[in-house]
Length: 266
Image (cartoon, rainbow, N blue to C red; front, side):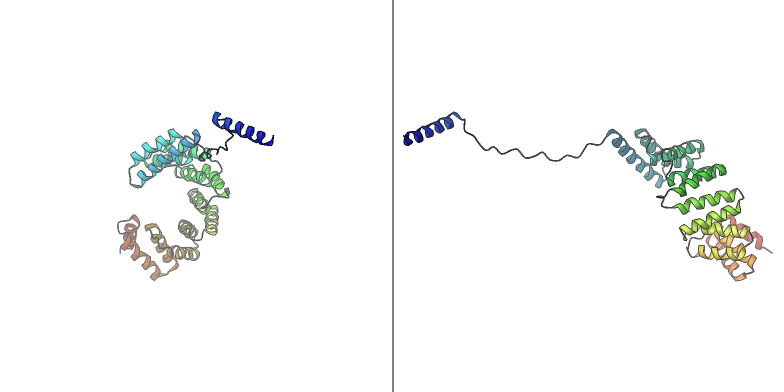
């Protein structure tokens, strides 16, 4: 009986095998390769705008402002909210003396990033250069208030220059001093502070800041003439002559050198 059951069982198994009904251990297919999410429409637009903005900056570097303007217009068309494109476009318009369009795009950049140090400083500096000094001051204040702004000393220096144009020497001096607290090597702040002190007839302290400026090794006709004037008022003949010689040898064709030549002629 047992032998019959075994035979029957073998027969059933054989029949199943012949019929293709056997149970097999199938191996599942490998999982698909992980795919990165596709860029959204906005991301694609920003990427395209970035490419054309970088091309525009390259054209600026090689002096092709027309090519730069063409590229940055494409960037703006790709993504009107891309702040670097707005800023570069404003800069190009400023360079070609199209001040209305420059202001439009500096303002657009600031509106898109109203709390960013760069956008506020850029707009403030432009407005000051256009004679809108009082309006510019609010943007310098906002620039300095940005805790992530890496160069607040630049905005403070620009603020001081604007205040000086308004003949506000007190606030200008304070701005330059604040800039130097943030960055003691800010050459423009050092030179401008020396100038304010010179205008205030504080020649001793003006000379000290001129010496600090000189250590940076970036002389200009303006700085050498200012140094000459300061040392002349202090009666430091040797120091004054040193500034004079440097001005005449390094910048002989400058307005400052010509003015010095005329003033020292017998």
